[in-house]
Length: 569
Image (cartoon, rainbow, N blue to C red; front, side):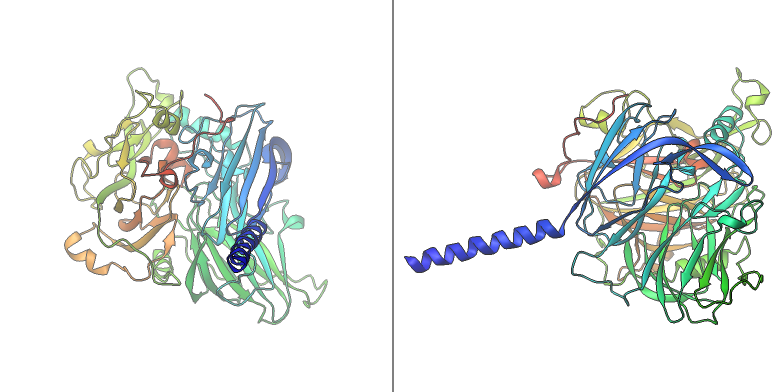
């Protein structure tokens, strides 16, 4: 009897120790984000910019895989706001995802909302940003997810982590830029500068003294966590005379490969190792546009930071060494780079499918409504820009969020008839596309998925108005990019190109200009999840749709109840 008692005491103590060590390892991190107007000076001019805690970019968050974030957002600005935790899976916590009128109503001026969620099974670099209007031009920051306590990276331990946020700066109010474009129906004004960690760098006026500097020692290896936080522009990034070893993207590890330059669409992140193996000096880190849309205006300037060796000669007055950057339209470099991505380990790609969607993506032009004056139709030939997926231009509700309407069974907010294929089959990447396809149907159409369904989506670019590389982001999920290519997707030939062994796991895919990409995932996260182009001009025109993923069986396959402080519309 004593032996049995001792055994049960031992088991109880072991369980207690395991529980205690797990609780200690998985911490809750509490933060307060105050959304406020702050005077920010760039390009010789001072603006009242919306920031978090008076910082631009905003606070850097560092956690471990398995930790919980609790972030109270207090809105002291004059605009509605939400915060999206870009790339976080949000398992069963869709109420914390953040897109305005999708998973929540906005946080009104003078109000607050607390986001609570746990990071599960993700390591690497993600980020957070506003998901209302164009506030994310200045409301954004990095989210670094380290391995669990006691674990290590699957590559050499870097001496230091250095987040580099690539952004865009308008010499004006970004919210007004969007409002003006919405009023006129024209394309929004392009930005006035690109930035690295909020600074334009030496090649812009009034910017040299605040250029971002990254110190490095000879022989040192640092982990650059590069984030494209720009609103509307894919960007090339490189460092003079140095090579990158790419080790991760979108908080997933990759088989390492070396490259001279990387490219990121808005929303994407890439982790690269860089070693101080060059003569001590100052070397420019530079980013500039990858522009795939023909005849569309874009910013052709270059933002710079400085990689500065601590042993570099002091006060010589010599400018840092400038790198060679790819040409603005260098799609070949983009293709070689994206096709180098392989998951570090064998991937758990669904091989049998329950849902197989074919979704066209692209722009459009609406004819000028009869009650509009010409100044409200300043798109090409007196039209108004629009965009769509499968000929549906997505319209957000305004009285309820989609998730609230779904959870509370509120009728009339959305329908679940988003088409699984284009309503009209045509030569998607051809040059002779019928003008009848330029005017999509506007609607709030969702696509319903059963819990656990295995999903494939073919994302097909189109030549309507102009072909373009579109960074497509899916909320609430990572997905495997099993193939990509150019022209029209052909299931009879192109399925032979599918990589079902070690495709990369990402949350944002750059659909090639005049081409296609195929993604797969398992619908294991109930809720309403928007999928949209991360070029913000395009999402404002309707280049989006949303999935309604039903609850499964039992508590662990069911979405959590809405929090008490969820904002109301």
